[in-house]
Image (cartoon, rainbow, N blue to C red; front, side, top):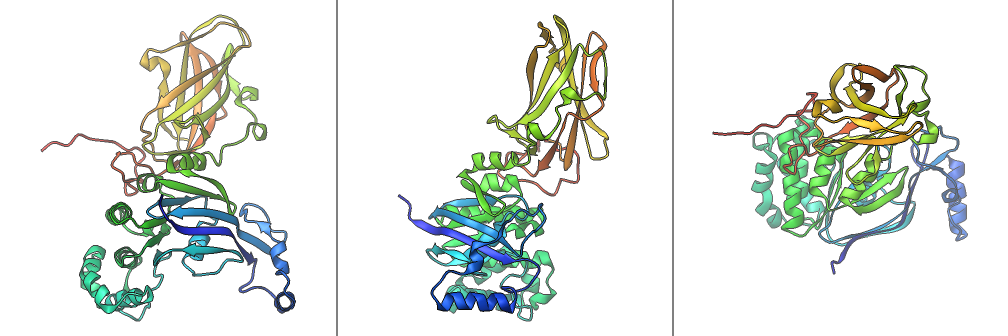
Length: 430
């Protein structure tokens, strides 16, 4: 059984809104008075949930609340969630950049962190001097750092500037050197935030490959925060999903990603089904009653990772009996409502029949290896039979969001081609 490398026990982190520090002198005196009497900090009993979309009604907010989990040695854990969910705060607590308001963290071994561009760098020191400084902070001797020095510089690709003050480095150069230091100075625990997104695609691939080596070959523990679903899926074996500062789900990485992609699904009671829309044309003999998207595991989602299989689910309603040769079509549109592509079932020699009036019938269309990259896609639909339009809603059936994914099935995602609307594959021969 693997040893526990990291233990989070009832960790919470509270911040006071709108000010730097703990708050007013009155609050500080109140805290001190409770402390000298051996009583609990009174401000730990108050505070709002960390929901960035809601208006603040009080002075305090919980960036994290009651976080408890263990990470085994050698695990690679992806920490995911929407912006503001508490991911970076969690890593800052582990890296001792800040302290928890309640609870405790136990970590076994040296921790190397890459949280923000320039973290741990002194701007007046050269790149070489910063390598030695960071190694010393981690408790390494000069001889140990010397053994790794050439490897770090080569990996970062900043040989030409290694003796230049780091304040003259670009953000990309800083990240390259920072990651090289963090990954090569033999930490037992490697902590990496979204900062890798600053690097170019070549370096991202290189960095993810190094993290895989660190975890699989060297048996070290990695905590990785990213919005890049392809990178998370290829690198991590387990995941933690944070929502509003609390753990929403923990499990293997595939299940965790499924739950993440389903976070924004609109509840039926909160939105009017397309069935009840009057903004439509056609005979009305068969109409769209509902529409949603499912992942491969059958979970409703509204966010798709490129390269994944998805199911478009159409619920039709028959307003007349014995309707045959039903041709179901849909189209994808970008944010400007420009048509990206469309598909009818008849294109693939498939039509449907509904026998009973008032019958509801569910039809699923599987799209393998999803290749569209537009940030948000809306879906429109049309039903026809024998050349006659049965239903043509002017309202959209639904919408979906697109995340980076492993489209090419290489274990890496490619963010450098997301300026294209479509991803394509080729067969290469020389």
